[in-house]
Image (cartoon, rainbow, N blue to C red; front, side, top):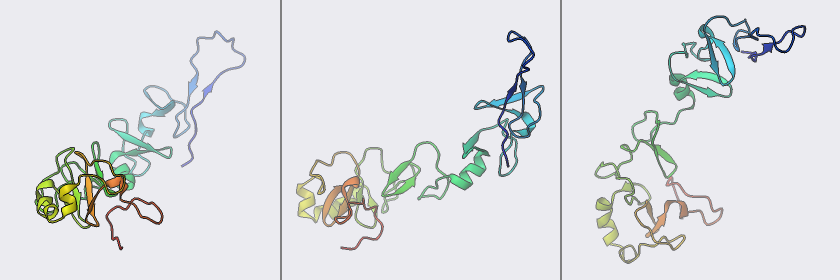
Length: 194
């Protein structure tokens, strides 16, 4: 689809104080706009011309997205560009939780063992395979002397407070501090080999 930018047509023979309104053209079809007109980001459209580029549905009555200059309905935008929750598989909108390179609805980011969602600000332990809440990680942590005596990050040395922590190589790490020694890329909990 070739887009035609809106333009105002001034008449050079008219004096600059003319009260005649400029001619407005539809951004989509190029025809002159008369009657009811939509204005979206300084572009004008006939009501019937303001449609989703993918499915052609009417965008004048509902929400829409603009991507690469194209106007898309929410359904097509989500289908083409949306992020899916790693927990339930549905699209995520609004508040999200990102952990170990994956995105979740806040209620879907849950302990692998007990299935309870992690409360905001609570410590999350990643043992190399599972994300665990404090209660489920407790038996594992009590068996490691270093974990029982230290709440410092093995990467930066700072205290791990009420944030998410990763348990790897028998030590605790801030999620952003667990990095590859060779390239310094943050490791996201996928397969890791010593």
